[in-house]
Length: 129
Image (tube, rainbow, N blue to C red; front, side, top):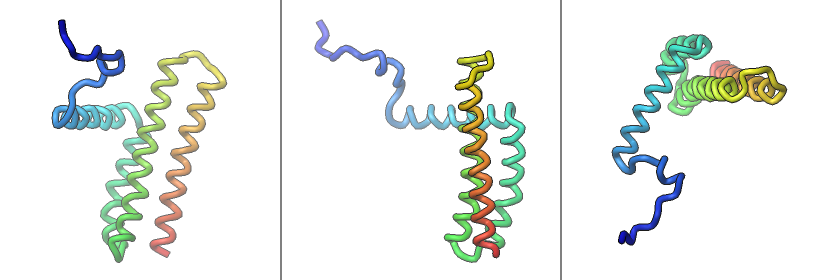
């Protein structure tokens, strides 16, 4: 008879630990970035924005703080876009028919992207002007 505690249902889904878990997480992240690039036109456009903005941030930023703010504000846009796309995918899977709550979730994700874009514009204006 085993003296090990029984695994809970949650523990069964936790998977690997340590370095193996980190390696798996990196693979999942790569898959997520590839899915965003393949399926989301807005993400591709924002990556192109980042490709232009990052060199400009290092050119116009005079200090490490300025460069970090300029680059970081663009990275936040990419993060929020991926999260918005994830919310939209889950909503579409859970509720393919039109529903007030589905619309609300999608609209709030879109608003988050808009706010991240406004945030970047304010940061770039503050640093460059």
